[in-house]
Length: 437
Image (cartoon, rainbow, N blue to C red; front, side):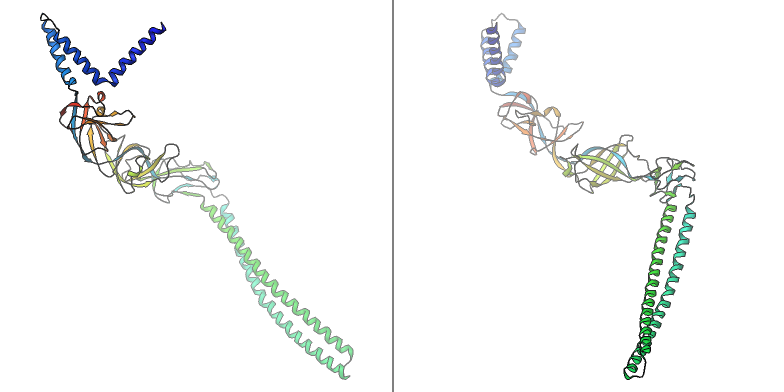
């Protein structure tokens, strides 16, 4: 049984080789055998047998001549707008969650979602509590520190005058000491007088140092007063800032996407007061594959059709990312679109077409595409001499009328029927149809 299986496998392999690899030679051999059998056909055959024999003979004549019949089309390239087609969504130009910066209860009535707010408009007002009293206390401390500074400044001239007085007394004590010393040397003054003069001079020096210390203390007191003023001023600024946090205002003109905080609710730092979005202008956001990113440029015109409407919207490319998404390897692109009547909503799906440089392309049916032995997508063409060739292509765009293909000559003969049964270098008998672009 194993020998029979091996023989059958060899026969099948031989048959596949003859039909796939040596198809032309096999067909020619079959045609020759058919022709010889037709010559041996008896004259008494029926009319049906004769008709089938004639038809079979006409088909094998073409094969015997080495030309397989195919249907081809003469295609001419055309200049088309090579737009980049993307699918994305709308996105608000700006969206901010206005949150509280301090702890207090809401004392303002809420604004309802959907309302339009102007820039700086009050969204939530919080209860001030004792913050006003704290601010008044800090301002009183500033006034007290200022008065202390004035007092310290007034002490400086007094201390400086005491220094001058001490210097004068020191000079007087020095003169008395010199006089007593000279008189004592001439025998005209006692030793006691000399000692008293020296003691007076030392006391004058001590008084001078004390007066100078008084000046230094007065200046130190003024500096202390300055520091107290700065500290109190900082406390005032902190109290004023705390009061300003009691009002949460709209950072820009837009729509309320949520109700503001309810009257009487407690807000803490980070608690949500309201969400404000800006829809004019609105953004169209999509992601460009890395194979198409070089065809998109800043300022390029773009059009889009929203899934929820039939009207086209237009805008310009305002942003193209320089860094690809790590997961999808795509680049974010943003298109700014005017939306004065706010009819375009945030998060709508859109089919976006970004204009790019035009290209010459051929419009052909998708069925004309085929693969070569290496798996490359392309077309099989036929020359004027009837020789088949394979040409690789790039698919530019897929439409309901066919596919637009680039990377081809301006004119060529494309096999649209029978391309799967021929290979490059084979001679065929091509029948041409008119171009339908």
